[in-house]
Amino acid sequence: MIKKILGICLAALTAVSSAGLIYGSGGVSVTSASVGGNSANIVYVDMIPGRMGEVGLANNSVVSDESADNIVKRQGNSYNLLTSVNGRYFNAYYSGSGTSYPDNCPRIYSAVITDGELINGGGDSKLPTIGFTADGKAIMDLVPFIPMVYVNGSRSFSTWGVNSFFTDPSAIMHFTDEMTLTVPLNADSKMVVIENGIVTEVSEGRNIDITSGAEVLAFNPDAYAEPPAVGDRVTFGTRRTPERSEDQTVLDEVVNAVSVGPMLVNNGVNVSRDNPSFTESDQQPDTVTLKAFIGVMNDGRVILGTVTASNTALADYLVDIGCEGAMSLDGGASTMLYTPAEGYIKSAGRKLANVISIVDKYDVQQETESADSGKASSITLIISEKEYIPEVEPYIENNVTMVPLRVISEALEAEVSYTEDTKTVKISKGDTTVVLIIGSNTAEINGNSVTLENPAVISDGRTMVPLRFAAEALDADVQWNGAEKTVIITG
Image (cartoon, rainbow, N blue to C red):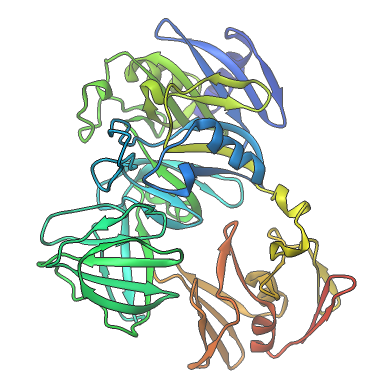
């Protein structure tokens, strides 16, 4: 406890006594400090409810790059952006013309999670990871993300990675529509196409483009698991086990995360010399390089920055100011740091594949959506004569009102449980049991299959379901007042 208090005090003193506070507003402050004899640019962000980290992808792809400014502007158009820093390593040295997967493209290396889904990398290696929950928490730990496949709710197996290519004959691969280049599958492999959670094709491998909303499993000739069959129901999940068991509860709630490294600080200790899986010369603890970094302070703030220093010197500094966990990000020409108030404190010297941003998670576009945008904002929700203001606002999509499940079910005194591995939601009230699978248009009520107008989805870390289905499945009555955009539920 004394160490933690001292760390917080040192952090406050550093902000005042370093080269100068540039600005501080809305829980965001920019400062500079001397690290290893060089000047470091540092941003602190208070993590509060409604604030979280976002992973921005170049062109919404895991195999593309574009200017940092394009990625940052896209995130600023959607949310109240507070700060951005460059993210995960990627292949920055492809030829630049005639891009092809997997070798001649700016593909991202290692794990990326967005909206709760693993969209890149994965495996059983524990890698330095920063994750963000929907309610304003940040966590840093060594974490393996094991991609899982569930067939018909009973059979399961793991893949070697998501949007990651393997020639090993035993490999099983999983590709999503964030893979925007043609995937060259060998003819002796088996290819399984999944659309809306259902297998629609099983065939020999070929060059394939992943269509929007589809997912593909590829089984190399000696894969240990049998491919699903046409008509099978397939869901995907991720097993996450932090090095520190006490982090499990928060890690289960993480909706956005990225694995980078090397690890600089873990549990308040300098671990820059304990990164055996990082073998590149510029990743060694005493090598002085230009780099970006990110971490979590003892008081829960996130720290981001750029500096030319060795990992050891940077880690020593971070421990001294009260950092609980920190890791290096990509460096060299990728190094970038931005705030709206200061602009580019450090500009990237090349295109980037991904960016980590801290945002206030309200949707700016929601306030200005036109009638043909497919969604409507500011819907009032009244349940049993009480008005509810959920953290995630109800909206209309395809003429179906989508609402936060937990608000509805708990207001109607139903019990809700969620199984991360199978993306399965279970709601129970009296003799009624409702089962939904995220992304699936099919649900079950007391074992009987029903078709949903819209599938259940995860939005801002909350499960959103079709209003009428959720309420009527729990024996409630639903009324819609279109003039006042008000939903009235009684039951």
